[in-house]
Amino acid sequence: MKKYIVIFICFFSVTYAQHSYIKTDYKISKEENVFIDSLQYRAFLYFVNEINPANGLVKDRSNENSPASIAATGYALPVWAVGAEHKWISKDSALDLSINLLNFFLNSEQSLSPDATGYHGLYYHFLDMKEGKRHWKSELSTIDTGLLFAGIIFCKNYYNGNSAKEKKLRTLCHKIMERVNWNFMTMPDSGKYANTINLGWDPESGFTDVGWVGYNEALIMYVIASGTNFTGYKKAYDKWLSFYEWRKTYNNIEMLSFPPLFGHQYSHIYIDFRNIKDNYMKKKGIDYFENSRRATHVQRLYAISNPMQWVGYDSLTWGLSACDGPGEKFNYDNKKFDYYNARGVSGPDLIQNDDGTIAPTASVSSICFAPEIVIPSIYNMFKKYSAKGLWGKYGFVDAFNPTVNWYDKEYLGIDQAPIVLMIENFRTGFIWKQMMKDPIIKKGLKNLEFTKAQ
Image: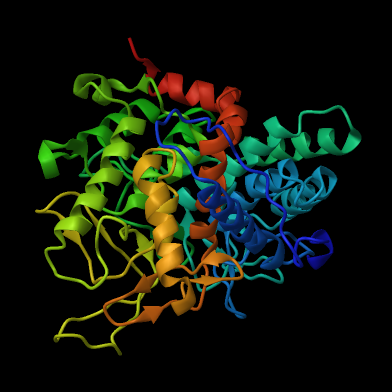
């Protein structure tokens, strides 16, 4: 894919964003602007370098033997468009990349075969980079398919011209979306997860025992399923809402709980939740955007309090989410360290897997919600830790742990993409503008009874 990167490897000319799409009183300095530009651009490079040009699939992570992740691959579609908007690649190149990828998904094998690409219009979580076949005996993943579909929905709105190529792209998008069978993944109508969308299925063992409930990253999936052919959306969403957990946290901040920050970000990459509420949020008097703002502040307050006394945690160094970790070979005060895990916090009495590992994507991808605390924090981490190993060819590495002086060597596609896309939403609202006009998104939000705030 290096043919798409022409002059930018040698130098990077930035244009300063003087105004943001998100209203904020925070005055961004020239130096911070340059840094944010560079961070967004470097994260973008992941999606032109870490792909298979033959089929468009994107690596799950940056190591040589990584398979593709369908979520990371779905994120590539709007990331390429952001690149076109910034002239990092031409719009025609972004269109060609997108058509190539969509052609692969439409024509890939959908069957009961254990090495197919998908089944019932859904796709396996991990795919072989070369052939696009199921990898690692992974599951037919509803959430990862949902994130792939979000990218596809974006595509059919962004490429809205009358050229033959753009018409072809929209046809591919419609065909892929029309064949999905969400009802196949519906849980039975009794039991703890009755009527919800199942987490996954595989040909060896069938369905999982768990359905998607409670506030987490799958909100975007329910919106898309409810806007397409999922007939049981009403019962499913009522059950989803019934698992919500409202908590009082630091400084009497009340919020809908989900400890890792990615759960407060993934759906917001695509849907502008400002001033729209479902029935649950109407009763609480806030929208999901405000809830993500509160979750962001809670993470910073947790780092300030630092109850586990990790090195480096402070008001300018924070951010817990799903990410890599140093692993058990490290030892500090007889404490254990995880590898990849979902780390997070929703207040002093709900701490999840905190082992001192910070994920830069956690704070960066909250830039829309709380720029006044995010921007100085990520710039501080850049200045303080870059020379030690935090910064590389794709910007921030996936994670670092100052307590044991560990810096990741890899980048993850699902963590790189939110950096690109949320910075863009912060500055221009670009992804939101394309998504919020889409009929599937409109229908899904209506079916789930979202209405404008009064």
